[in-house]
Image 1 (cartoon, rainbow, N blue to C red):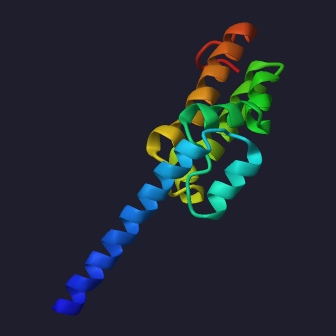
Image 2: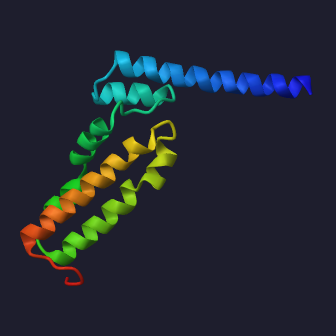
Image 3: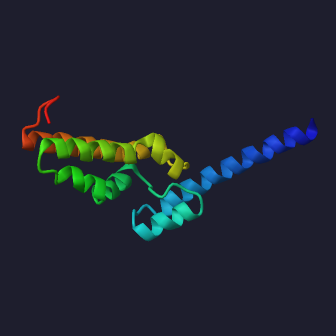
Length: 129
């Protein structure tokens, strides 16, 4: 019993230490520079210090661009569907397990906004292709 409770205390302490390290890194490196993102990821932290940092990365990505540059409604729907699957928070959680849900939702929000804007520009209606 003593060994088990000691193990639980060690695991709890490691989790607390990881959270404290995340907070220190967030304060020291609040930038979303790709090198720092990689460094944060390499040491087991969320590579994006804020939801806005992840949203900016998303807006620079190929999936976002495909949604924005779709030339007709059916192409827009295909691009949106593919992008939504790629950036869904449930999927990205496995890539970035240390990132808070709010951060991981940022890219989905960006994709949704891009879709709505492009659908309005193209005159797409629900159910139409």
